[in-house]
Amino acid sequence: MAERGRCRSLPPRGRNGIIAAPVNSLGGLRAKALVALWEALPATASHQGAFDFPDASRSLFEAVAGLADLLPLVRELEARLEADVGGPET
Image (cartoon, rainbow, N blue to C red; front, side):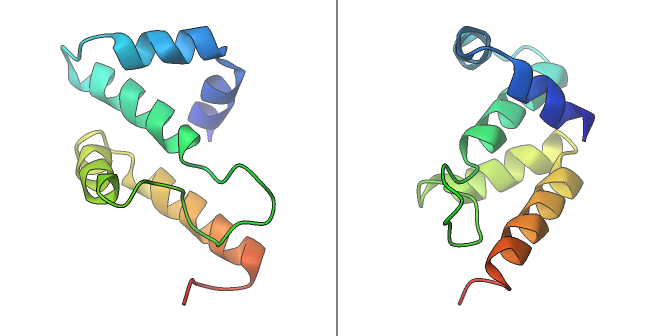
């Protein structure tokens, strides 16, 4: 979970810079995906057990996460969110 610590400690201006920068490599795509992932974490402790993606962007994020080799991290965080609310969303 080293990515989590780095992204959480990144000031908003740094995150905005990553979002605004063009993607010229897989590393750039990975950086943008990590920012999107952390921005999609629920904002409050009383969440529904899932990431807070706008409806249409979830499948696009899944594709990017797969290309950037982030799916294991995504699945781990999803499991933690589900465990926080006592099980999978119904």
